[in-house]
Image (cartoon, rainbow, N blue to C red; front, side, top):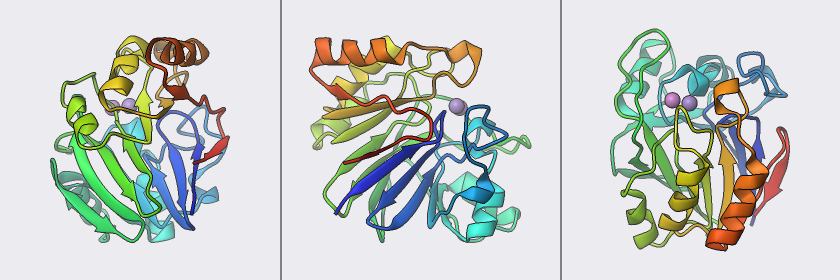
Length: 230
Ligand code: NI
Ligand code: MN
């Protein structure tokens, strides 16, 4: 039983959960300036979408249509997908969880904004707390500020892995991400949403050192295209 996580740059991750392929926030080549692969080169059984901004959904429609993957997102984005020919979307809402073949997925609070690239209202932005069938609990924060709501995640068991944005400017930066990691009681952190564009340039190695020194939390800095197995 294993979870393999591959980073495609920005907030795009491919998770292989015992053979089930889950893509998070598909933003791939050439839309994503750092992604090593295009939407034609990846597979997905499920696609998780945190919110409607282009740097999270640019490749959503073509990937969902080609693969037939079920999209897990919120009501508004699922409705938009339905209006664009993708009928298989799960439209959840704040605090709700659903059981899927790979585990249980809950929509968590994210403080950010959200609108789809064509201007359609996309509801609230979210993160995901995923209890994988193999026992790993993974928190994907999405685009968010540091928020006290993260303490709730720590209170209900914490996260074996927290995937946190550290780029600042659009989301929390490294200072707040060090606090977030502690509030969600993360055993391990993978940072994202940095070094894609000039405004979100960050020294990720410095973040990892601070996390170890100030919080005693292990951090994996993935190179784009690199994988880690939990
Ligand atoms: Ni965003
Ligand atoms: Mn973003």
